[in-house]
Length: 242
Image (cartoon, rainbow, N blue to C red):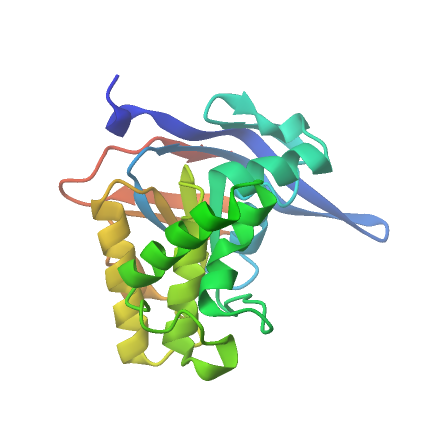
């Protein structure tokens, strides 16, 4: 099996329930989903459709109520908080709408943060962070702090930070939501380049125009996969909802 055929993520019968007084809210309902190495996916849907809940499951930020989640063949649906945290730090990358940078740290220090938690040598991590800052066009801004950067530049820092540990999957949650159209377009071009280099990306969005960029679009509605479309030239997908 080639790397491009490898299944990185497999959800089987995943549900997420939230108690609401005497009622139970089924935020996800029987999700079956496979994501392969090199996939570039938009998860699209209305507010309340289950996008954030699915992201929390896929990103090991929460556990499913029912079903299994295999990440690189490991059942992470049964892991405790400490083990889930270790998985997030070593195998997953995150890019959020609000950037989530530490205001007291410089550009290079913000990029270094995940490597610090992995116990990497400080000199090595600085070198890696500086190279990643250069890769996203911020090599001349290493000593600047977030409040000295534009929104687009802050998101570039967040992108660099997300790939420091060579994650199996990068999750982008409404990553251009706070940006103007020009800056948002530049961020999406970086995503395209990351995918072209072999990175697996999953974008959570409500924006139809953004979803048109990705070869695969998964539509969620009422906690179920309404459709899973692979455009011409993209991998054939396997996903169903019950």
